[in-house]
Image (tube, rainbow, N blue to C red; front, side, top):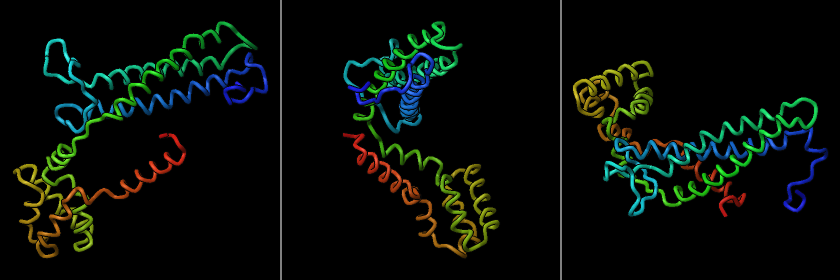
Length: 239
């Protein structure tokens, strides 16, 4: 441990299993984050969404019966390993409870769980790096999905904008009526609002169009991402 720079324990490992459990728990947290990433890609690659895609190479087979399929098999592997790994972490925490010192019926649980955790996370890191480094991102499809509701996605923003002019409750009623009309009769929220005289009296069509632009309603997301990346690079995790 000294050669590895891990520090030397103050007492024997026989009665104190917390260091092993802590190590396993940290690896479990890393695996959980990787599983979350893989699960996100898995669902965003669905045909109905199609906003991102894990790396594909010629010869990669998605289905034994449907040759057209490009399944997210790398992410599927990460999800499978990640879901099973967390139970090995639970086993390591179970090994904390033993009778007196060095109860072999308990610490032998670690012989099973700890190697599986290390090997499983190693696989997830290897596959996860490939997925992230070569992830295919489809911004055009993202915008298409944002526009699929015909502006209804921005109903909150429209309500806040009109609330400054009509009052919050009235604005809520106006947007609610327009949204219901758009959904039941077809068309966009912008068109439904344009037919309401209460909206015409306080806002121009250009203002409503700008309010319904999803690219201008991202809040602090870009700044938060930049800050997180800068902090990570400062800590040299990405080197």
